[in-house]
Length: 64
Image (tube, rainbow, N blue to C red):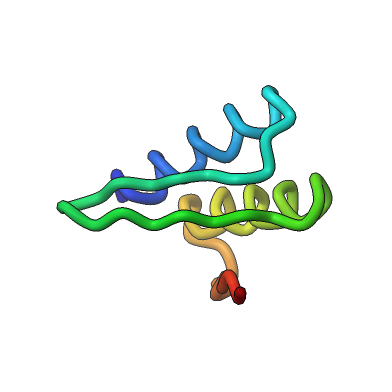
């Protein structure tokens, strides 16, 4: 669950700062995600919060 909490915190911070690129570090793994729009970021945040609370599941993928 800590990973989801970290992702939520990073997304909320990025949205507040107006950034569209986020880097996550977890268990020695580095993952970088760049969103196309604020709308995409808010949808990802909503999905993560839903997963955190046990709601419906959605898989998020970043494609280059």
